[in-house]
Amino acid sequence: GGFAAGIERTCMILCGTENIRDVMAFPKTASAQDLMMDSPGAVDASQLRELGIKIVE
Image (tube, rainbow, N blue to C red; front, side):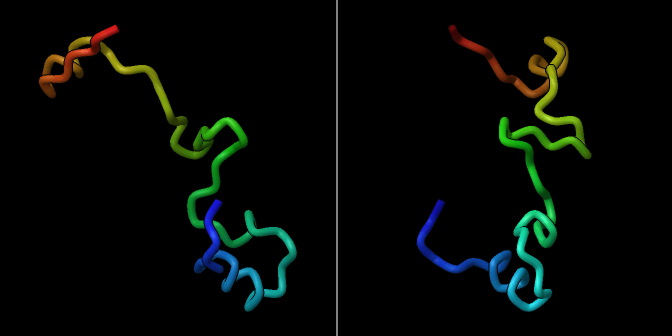
């Protein structure tokens, strides 16, 4: 959370709604999931190889 008012809060006031989620373009759940895009999701090893990404534990 930041200190600035933000575009969502401005839209919330202009629309007369009490819930900021009503005006958010891409709302997320409390666990940071995007239910419309089903993300974050699992990534296949082939996708990682294709992009040259190596996971180090």
